[in-house]
Length: 448
Image 1 (cartoon, rainbow, N blue to C red):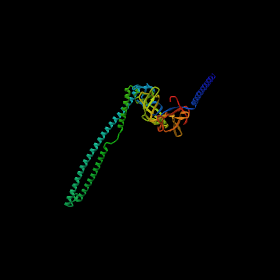
Image 2: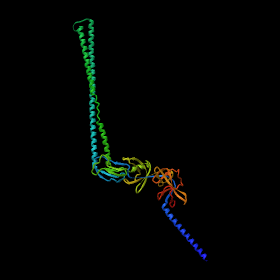
Image 3: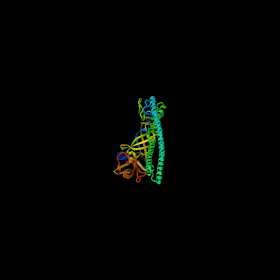
């Protein structure tokens, strides 16, 4: 009996001791786990994946007019009323301003009077020219007739003098054959007569030649003057210009002095006031809706490499967005930024709106990409940490191992790596709750 009681007490003792042992082991396990949670890094792991890297560029800018047109009219007309303001949208044919009909009539009358004056001057000049031409023709005819008459008279006189000279020669020759003779029939007397006739003939010939030369000069003097008179031609040019001005004024008159919008658009400048005279240039500036609007902004030097002319981009405001193409890229004056322009469809946005331009470019497809947070840089080397299971005295443990890698390309979220040391099964630390070195034990977070 006593022996049984002793055995029962011993069994209870050992059971109690075993229970205390289990309790102590449980407490140590809890403490160990608690200590482990403070000393072992918790990490998220990823495996390399295939993807294209995307580069997103955002540019702030404004919606501006793509083309501006000017509204013109004839100068020096009185502005009676103006019907639009700057910033107002107008339709083609909409009334912009009215001109005073009285000043319009004054301008028409003034130009018609100027034109009539030039035409009368030309008519008078033409009449004077024809009268002078008739006088010159009459003078030339008289000079030619005088020359003909002078030549005929001289020919008759030359013939008579020559005949008398021949007679004197014949008488002298006959007398020489008869002998010396007496008195006026003597050879000496006849020779003197011959010499006198020869001298008279020569003098007559020289005088006739001089008369003919004088008559020829009279003909030359009577020839019409070849003078260059450009006054009529100049007047015709002036009349042609006046006709053009009259045509413009008649068009204004036909419109009853109304200035109408030449296209749909927005008035950007009003350059006249009521009571003023119209200038010889534009009176309104306005946009042309048919040419659309354009987005204008500036790229930084760092972002220029991601954008090219012709690229598809997205323009968006608070209310809408449109896909368009980059029209131009030009360096600004400071050479610090690049001006970017993109044409917009008509009526897609409002002039003066603030807008943003977004462009997304993709790289080639890479077979090995990881989050940028997984890549570390040490001097000139890049590396990642792999999570590997290793056998230890405590059993299998997850350990971080440093692996050098080659970065091919990266954006703000991912890096493309040379896949020589990694594969799709590699477990790479993407982020950790504390500092990790190669060989440190790690614990992957739940779900990894």
